[in-house]
Image (cartoon, rainbow, N blue to C red; front, side, top):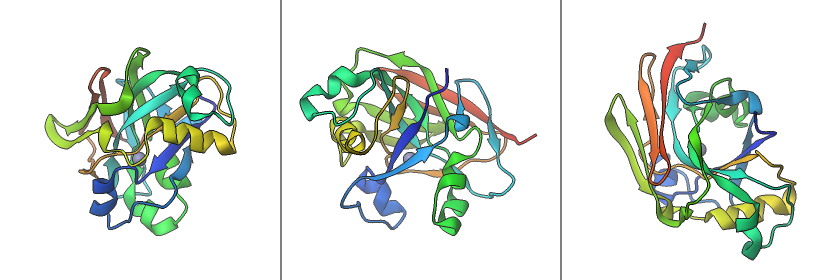
Length: 203
Ligand code: ZN
């Protein structure tokens, strides 16, 4: 089943904001990825023809379990079903060129999720890593997030209803970089597992 929506958060790790020359925003920077961008583990990332700089972003994904709005901080655990790995695949050149991020972060196959949902997990301090062809590219910890999972759920549900199956992406640590056709990119999160996808030319 596809999520109704994916709400993602930009620049939620200070070291990643800095590497792209950005400040940590005063309020969380939110954007959507469409349901049609989702692929599962072992499915391929199709390199879009309108970009020449597609990049990986390893992220902790939160899967919502209950319809909710205006969630108070102390009730956040009640609305979370579990956690999985995400790759917020981004056409960096398009993101910089177009201002709005809909195409840059919303193209088909730009949201690998998986490999499964871990329901019994404390998200406070987990290792988040990304490898490309087995080489380590990102190594952060969720404790470095500027806003915690609870902060983000409170902030997002102030504005909108989240539905069961909706996904919240919590930002990426430093070390983002390019992918090429043929690469195997793997996101691993401590306590969850590894999400691995191959990059192919769009057919
Ligand atoms: Zn991201």
